[in-house]
Image 1 (cartoon, one colour):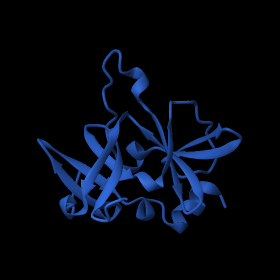
Image 2 (cartoon, rainbow, N blue to C red):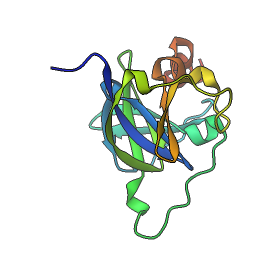
Image 3 (cartoon, rainbow, N blue to C red):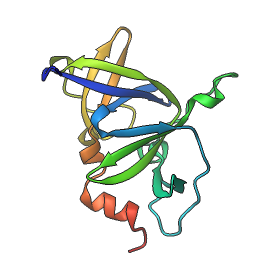
Length: 158
C-alpha cells in the first residue's frame, strides 16, 4: 500500500539542475525523435511528433526557463529524450537532457522553493528537496501547463 506521506518522482536533468515530476503525471519516457515544427506556436514549443498514432506537442523547458543545455560527455549522447506527461488528459512531451531515476521522497522533505532558482519562476515549483550536495527541484505540472497554456500548446495560432 502506498504511503500517503511519500511521493514518487521521476527525476531528470535539465542543464545543471535535477528536476522531478510526480510519477502519476508521467506516461512514459521515450528516446529522442525528431519533432516537426508547428507555425505560430509559442517560442518554447519545439514542435510535434507522432507516438504510436498520437500527436504529441513537445515543450522545450530550456527555452521556457532560459536554461543552458547540459554538456553531454561522450557515451552519454543517448541518455536524453522526452518525458511524456499526461496533464488533464492531454499528453505533452518535455525535452530532457538526461533521465535520472525514480525516487521516493517523504512529503515532509519537500521544502518551499527559494525565491529564484536558475531563472525558473517559483510559481512552477512545488518545492525543493535537499539531496547531499544539491537540490532536487519538484515541478508543479498543473501550474506549468494550466488550461490556458494547454490551449496555446495543443491548438497553436488559435
